[in-house]
Image 1: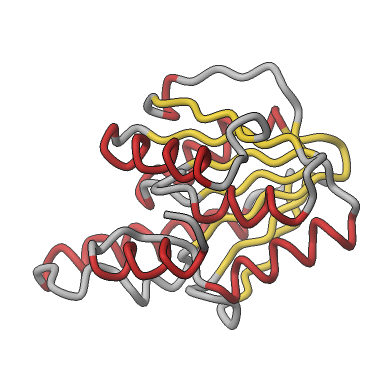
Image 2: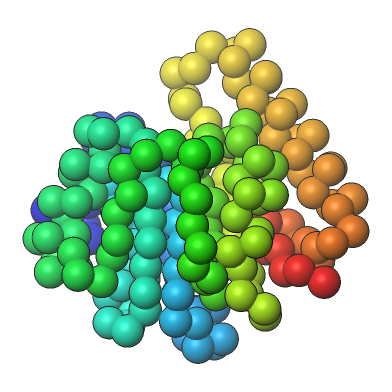
Length: 190
């Protein structure tokens, strides 16, 4: 795929979850405003978010993690098609088992919703001082349209409990913005 519109179309036609444009716009404006130079993404899917970030500034160091081999293969091809494969490091593995020593200005968690708390705890040590963590899909509005009601209810319950626990965490300043995309949590360390 050679342009963002093709990726968006592919994602829609193949039910691949990618961040909404409003979420991408928020991330890009945050990177510009804070002059961030490093980005970690948990949940690459087909590379849409990382490509948007890389196109913003060729000097941003990007690491992205995807466990689904089929999606990771598409993402890798997309990075090559956009000539961004030198700027974006793709790790094909389950983020639960990936250990990184690098520090990042911005960490974007857009992976398994039931593992949001795990990923927040695991990767918060990779956040630079003054950095920000964003967690996507706080509303779960797009949650599998054809999913069974019990499954939807289960995931909404998990997500609601995560939001409540997130707001109780004393080590973070947390803002939940349900008006951006599918809802995002914006997290900074105190």
